[in-house]
Image (cartoon, protein in one colour):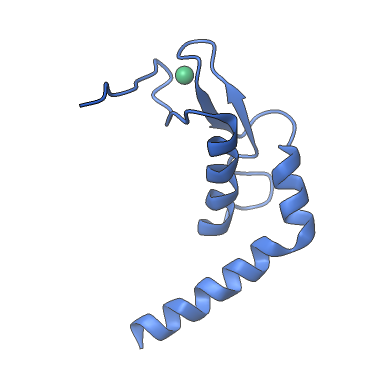
Length: 88
Ligand SMILES: [Zn+2]
């Protein structure tokens, strides 16, 4: 079995910056964060050496582009329709 990764920050660990960015974008699609709330960036942790999400600092460039493209809103709309179909 692989060793369980832990960090003193207790935040979820991502093994690469790319995986953290994917998770960041996924989080914005899954949850309706109020403006100015929720994770906006990823950073390399001084403690564990891996990556975490953060709500502090400058917005991640990939996320910024994704939000600007309108894909998040489109994806949310698609999810709403899937929910309707599922629970009807
Ligand atoms: Zn860490």
